[in-house]
Image (cartoon, rainbow, N blue to C red; front, side, top):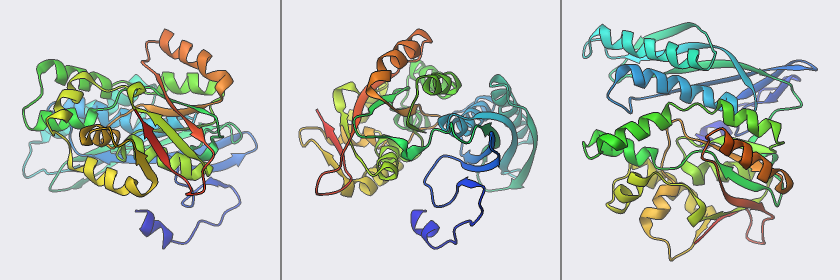
Length: 325
């Protein structure tokens, strides 16, 4: 997609704060000195068996981009593609009920939508949010020395792949569903209160891919410490057995040119860092003097955030992500 975007004309408008030229989670347009509108859209195929839960997860995943920028979602419209010749309309009803319920859980009304026929189901939301133009948390705002915090464990892609292949335990199904149904709203509010300089949500490109976007945006390198990175328990076991979505290898391959991974780490460990997440956590860059208080409040709210690395000045080889053991 980056290759395609390079061929497109940039939006020339004085009120565009974040547009196509910025690899960020949302587009942002200034409405006044104190108000900006923040826009995003996201859809994906089913990751769980329950149509209702799939709809809820799709809603929460779509809202996450708004939260990652420190904005507040105010409304949404559904985006739906449905194979009406293959699945009964009752399934469509349940998915849309889930979408509406997931958004409502976050205080966001679904005010409309658009549905098309498709060979495969695809659902999500186009979300509109608001923020103060000077208080946005963008991907490229980090500074050297900032501490990286991750608010959810990795391994969602591994577990949902195991679920599709009937290799996931009932406990694993419950855990991954619960994780994907956990919105990032509370973590985002804490992030803003404690002066986060940069953030993104971990989704399809995996931790490595999204961290590289943050690093490139800031003109910095980054260091990850493998033992500090939270991994879902069953995901670790399944990863060692080679259970990964196809996207993990593609993500890792795309990152290798700008990544240095300790050779003592096994391939499955590297692949977990590239595992595509659905409704993943926030990756946040905090000033060093603010991170302890932020982690304390995140923990008090029951959010299992972990300090996993830091931002660095790039060396003579350019922007890199280093992974140590």
